[in-house]
Image (cartoon, one colour):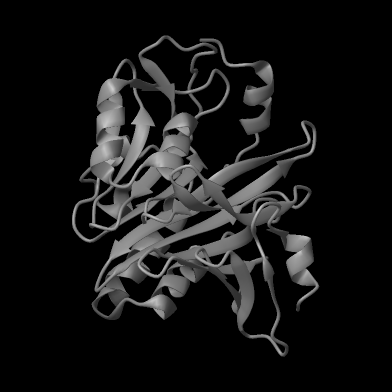
Length: 290
């Protein structure tokens, strides 16, 4: 199977920053900061797929004129964050029957899976590989407290499983630092990783929505180019997603996956709501609500 050049082109600019996490306290919480250059539009939507509803964040590829998903959660509580892995390694431009690209694992997870056990079976059936000119890894979590980070190795799958009650992914290769003290990790996103991890550790005993938001605040990217453009907190038990844009976590929107509605939730002077089914809502449209 050969992957078309258009698909490669679509994904080559996917976030070279971003922070994703899963925390299992009294209930499960997932989060993701999407860090991206300002010239690309971003939208959020709830889609009705064959296996149920899926919430996704997508960015617009201006050259190919198409929306590309980069994180999502389905109605069964499966969350996945697809992020750039650094350093870049050479992948493959075509697949054999027993190979799967990392982004395809992400897609299968949110579109059709209900547990990490199902995802593990997919991983056991394929060799995970990178695209020729794009290196990605994916964080996947489920409601039961299971979570993993999947990366492609040299002829083997590199899986970093949750060890305890939380897991964080930025951009360094996690498989290289299993059981490594956070202060000794060196790589792209290491400081964001340490900030998020420290915040979770300090607040785990009372971890709820404020702490889920606080974790993303701790990991905000202030780089002038790759700054945080959108932040999402996922409450899988309630089927709810909380969203902040432009690095501002004082104003929060709330999405109900059951209703397919986004509404102002905190920090607004006026209440507004609209449907996010089908086309969804873009960040520029959300800014008009402020």
